[in-house]
Length: 150
Image (cartoon, rainbow, N blue to C red; front, side):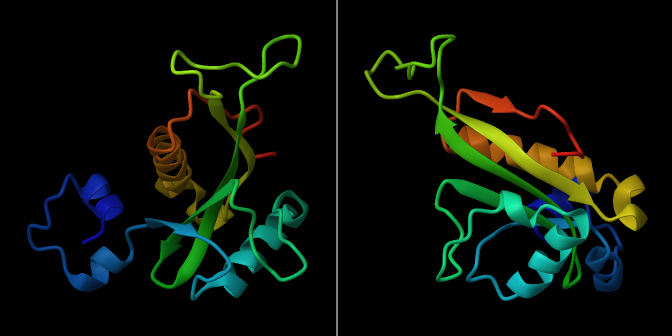
C-alpha cells in the first residue's frame, strides 16, 4: 500500500482487497523518465496546460518544476505542477534567509483533475502532497493563486 493509499484509508487495510486498493488514488512525482510520461502529457494537454511545462528540445522537464500526478491504477487522473523560485521582496530583490541562502518558494503553475474523479478528493490529495514536497525542498511559501485554472 502506497503512502497516499495509507493516507486515504488511515493506514488500515482491514479486509480491503487489492482490487479496491487499486481504485485509491496514489500520487507520484513524475518526469520525462516515468513509464507513463506519454499518458501524463495527454492528461496535461486535456487541461490545456502543456505550455506551462518547461520541456526542452530533448524532451527533458525542467529541474525547477515538480510535476505530481494522481494515478488510479495505471491511469493518470490529475496533476499539479509547481516551480521552485527565489522569494522576492516588493522591489523584486531576492530575499535571503538567516543563513545567507536565497529563500525559495513553490509557485503552482497548473493544476487539474479529470471531471470523473474531481469528487473523489484527488485534488486535495495533490495539493497536500505538493505542499509536503515543497516543505521537503525547504520552500518558505506555497503559492497557488488560481486553483484549477492555472
